[in-house]
Amino acid sequence: MKQRVNALLRDKFNCDVILEKPKDRSFGHFATPIAFSLAKELRKSPMAIAEEIAGSFENESMFSAVESVKGYINFRLSESFLDEYASWALSHGDEFGCSDKKGTILLEFVSANPTGPLHIGHARGAVYGDTMLRLGRHLGYDITAEYYVNDAGNQIDLLGVSLQLEGRSSLLGENVEWPEKYYRGEYLSDLAKEVAALFGEDALRDESRQKELALWAKDKILALIVEDLKAINVHFDTFVSEASLYDEWDRVMAKMNGGVYVNEGKTFIRSSDLGDDHDRVVVREDGRPTYLAGDIIYHNQKFERGYDDYINIWGADHHGYIARVKAAITFLGYDSSKLEVLLSQMVSLLKDGEPFKMSKRAGTVILMSDVVEEIGAEALRFMFASKKCDTALEFDIEELKRQDSSNPIYYIQYAHARIQTLISKSDKSMEEIMSAHLHDLSADADGLLFEALLLPEIIEDAFESRQAQKLPDYLKVLAGRLHKFYYDTRIIGTADEAKLLKLLLVVALSIKTGLSLLGIEAKDRM
RNA sequence: GCGUUCGUAGCUCAACUGGAUAGAGCAACGGACUUCGGAUCCGUAGGUUAUAGGUUCGAACCCUAUCGGGCGCACCA
Image (cartoon, rainbow, N blue to C red):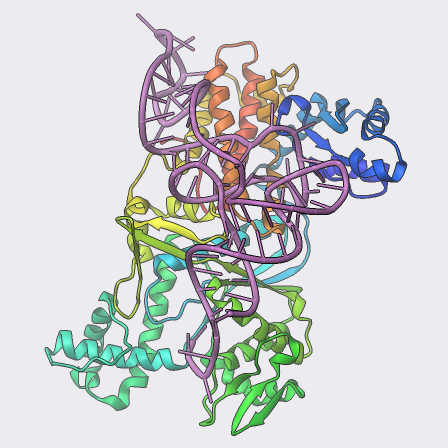
């Protein structure tokens, strides 16, 4: 819709024109402040320019009115245009809002360490990433959802140690000496039991088997994580194992041509040449690679797979890490601007008004699966999708767990269910409804129709600006307009019945499509 | 200390990325048809957009300084 108007204006002015939705809908459907920016060039007052421009649209069938007000130019779309567009939308069903965007994107998100089940802090990145995935695919992009599995390095060793100690302590009743750092939690005692059953109790005491047990455990834990994600309707296409990458090490280092050097027995990357604060160690004196080493090979592998664009969703605590990875990509001979790193800010938790620290090692984590059990996957998804991801979030745990009727998800679902009820109560056939013409609409009806038809713009804007929360915001507004309209307007049994039901079908379509892009199924009844 | 990011109603967040009178939801208070679902709707109250300057037709948004919070500043991941 907006594209059509934009195209028209672009032809007229030979440049992109800013189109906005006026806050006060009585002004029209779209507005532009272009006269202000032209005023300087043309050395005329904005009002005069606006008058002139508005007058030039008189014979345009797309608009029923184009007016200039205080220098703004306001456009009102004609009913025939809106009706035609509404019919088009209804005939396209689920594909409403689809576009023909081209390009392949590799989207990496979650990538939580396989050392424990997902906690509530992981949920934000998971929901955000999956929402971007759904939006992008709806628009036509060919997107691969990828999970990077950190199955190498210290935390895997730590997992093996923790598993044995947990088993010896809780299962065999031994007094064990806990190291400074270790993992704990219910999942570990479950795994220890499995170890005893599968490998025998001796496996819990034999230090030489730590590595073996750790590798066995991380696969089990990864399976748990996949289950957790499935429960909130998040699915990945590919999993890349960090450990599997190191065979490529020599070949990748050769590609770095000059980007690395050896000093005091350690290998450094010259990241300070490319904006980082220091050069970073990639291989320690004893030959063990650092975390960065894995990421260098991984990103080389990503670029060798040849996507048009790369998006990583990282927690904000990794922001200092971006410069290093981008430097590595440049040394490898690729265009580092193709990698876009989206940071999702931390979720901080409150309990009874006091800050609550989660720690996987201390076992004080709020598991995502527990919250899902309490409030449901849909409420959790909606809650995280609603928040702009570049501001830190505060949640009170008790509030999060409360199944509240104030939850906006019910408000939106209720709007959809109300429409379905009306459709089923009406005597009109679907043919009668679909062939009705939307004309002589009240201001409220017109506003509702216009809002519902805005979905494609919202989807595109939300994806391209990487601000997923624009979709839930829109759905709240649309549902609000529907509820008000429903309250004010009698539909069944009136002369306008078929016409208004057609309008409501468009609203239902936008709600249903919008919710599905949030990974939520619209309900016909509640 | 350095970097980075944020600061909007009592709380949680918006504001079309520089545009018209800064808006919603909670929480508070007061209302709504013997009517298509009251999980709804309407109203009241709540603001010097952290503070002080600057840029211009126009600033919550851009620039500078100050104050306050988050997150980084590993040969951990």
